[in-house]
Length: 104
Image 1 (cartoon, rainbow, N blue to C red):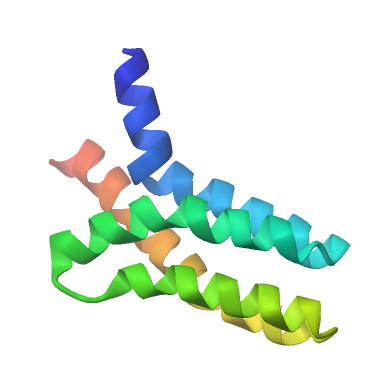
Image 2 (image 1 turned 180 degrees about the horizontal axis):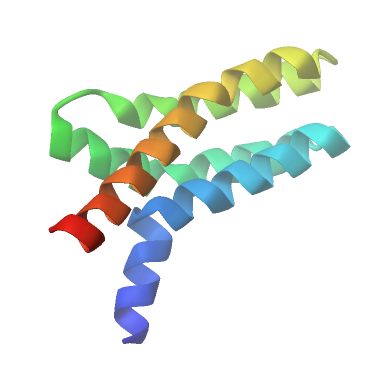
């Protein structure tokens, strides 16, 4: 039971949600180090999607690193825009999870 929860926190949509929440807090408070941590946290989930679908989605973590750079340079609006692809991927993971659990 605990192993399943830990796997979902690392590879499932909760990892994307946690990473988005950490990223939003980091941009809001202008802590670029926390944004780097969020990019590292999102890597396993996006790598899992990359292997599953054959697209290089693991590069979405680089967008968070780019967001950390823009926060460091004092342009947080660009950092907010760089989070949109991760938000869309997380919503897609949520859709797949709920679709599989209700209609699978």
